[in-house]
Image (cartoon, rainbow, N blue to C red):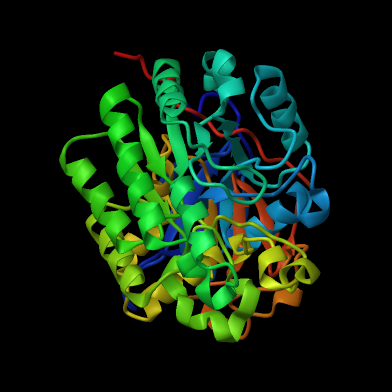
Length: 452
């Protein structure tokens, strides 16, 4: 990796590696052709452009492993233009995007066209997941070199129905294993979701956690792990929402199975008790559950059973979210707040600084086998976020880049809003303004792993 010119050259001076104590000395970070070459106390500038950090804290550019920008096809809801601006606003320099609206990536031709579409629009580096469906199986091996993973909806959600045919799912898991790419799964048991819906025919958002129950996620994760045992597939559980699900992932890893997981800030900062205040803004799939579930997921982040925090950024216009509950779409925006929301867990004393940072940088990249991202060390891409950890701001959805113009975190006082963002040596965000029109590139991928 990192061969040849990947970006610009830049010397960042007077930055303090975060987390740090008050007496921590500033460092210099030299980026050459987009790649970090040196991190030292003092470095000569040479001919490179210099950015004086003036004592700001510096972290690696964040890696959001799960976003929906709904583009191509539903650009009116977000699009790569707004979505990648929002990513930079949240300190994110790399995203992995899930297409859950047509055109789906079920063929090499469709996936290749999507990558080219994104390349001309994205301000951040990107990976695009291919869809794991019966119709995509003939081309999984062809798509594998171009995608980090295959996305499987085990439970129905926005845009796609859940899969219930166990034999067909086993074939899909086995085919993904032969193609050498992991499966990332939306784990909710479709049969249980349907039963929950019949059990609560007049549900409101206050019952959303019952309509998409704890049991639906737990059973689905257990079944997916069993498919891993039987087929040799690798599994990543997206948007983990339950403490019991985290325990299943922990046990699978202890067994030596190739299973990883990520959660979202909504499952750590919110609970079903927020429904009276937020209404349908709280409606996401899987549902946001109890404070005890949040505590269990945080414990799993601390011990490494859950690898990452990815937003599942899924914007919808406010007029759609404020429809009656049954007709309101699920999903919320938050890529534009990923670092402030992650830092808040540290400020509240709920997560240690090292784990919080790792969960949105190197551990996030590692969980989907994305090399060269998430560390400030020589040889890694020159992606940096500079911020003042003491400066706070009140969240106002209308001021955020997302087309949706609302936030479930409206009115919260957060810290960590980026002052500067550097993407592979190029200053792409400064003092609240995006400085580039595109320039994102496809993420480097590890080769598909040999099967057997």
